[in-house]
Length: 153
Image: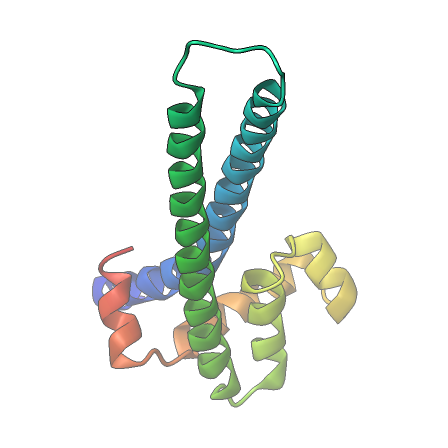
C-alpha cells in the first residue's frame, strides 16, 4: 500500500470509528443530564420547606433549568449526528459486493464488537476477521460528503 492509499485507508477507518465516538458523546451527555437532574431534585426538595429563606434559590433553580434544557438540546443534536453517521456507514456497507465483508464491518463499527466476539460469531479466527475488515475498508466507497467530513473528524 503506497502513502496515498494508506492515508485513504486511515481516513475511512477514522470515519467508521466516528460512530463509536458519537455514541460515547451521547453517553457522556446523558450522564451529565442525570447528574443535573439529581441536583435539580435536591434543590426542589430544599424549596419545599415551609421555613422562609432569604436567598436566591429561585434563581438557582431557574439557572439549573436553563442548563438542563441546553443539555437536552445537545443530546438531541448528538443523537441526530450519530444517526447520520450510522446511516452513511450502513449505506456504504450496502454497496459492498461481499456480504461477509459488510457483516465484519457492521459487527466491528456499528455493534462495537471486539475481534474475539466478531470472530466467534462469524466462525473466523481473529486474524482472519482483521484481514477481512482491512480488505473491506479498502473497498468501501465513501460519498463525497463523507470524504469531506473525514477531514473534520
